[in-house]
Image (cartoon, rainbow, N blue to C red; front, side, top):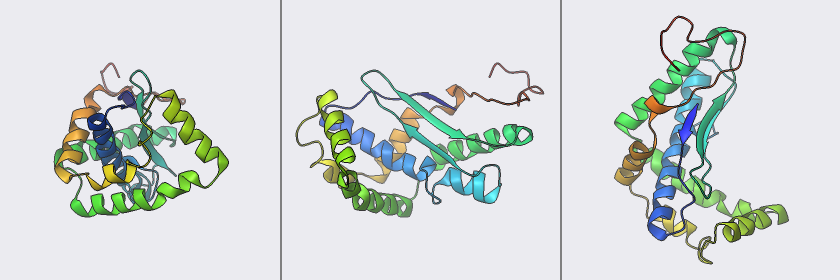
Length: 183
């Protein structure tokens, strides 16, 4: 499930907005066991082994997508539960504790991007392709330190529109067969 996301940010204000979104999305849909979707859909409901979502900004608007696998007979319930978690997060926001844990994790894991030649090459290639400033990587931790809870929650609300999500299912059954909608 997902929607169109943002373009790759090249100016400082847009880069901060993308950092704000990255922090909020890590709380909502990051791939670790602390993410809200993982906690609810996997741990509490047992619908999937894993669920995660991410933004893939490009030169044009890239996708924001959330993906998981589940049994055919649980697809509708898993989708509905996922949308409920997303809507609840957008309505109530993330907490200051969640934000602090996430920003600490992002800062502490940042050096791992430089742990291999492939990682370094990927980062430099991305910077060159999108014509990002030379300070892009050195400013990354500064952008994380500038994250404000209210701005994270507002950015999440501005970007994510669950009512407009395109939802694609693959399986033997149509999870909407009993609901008359055009999803």
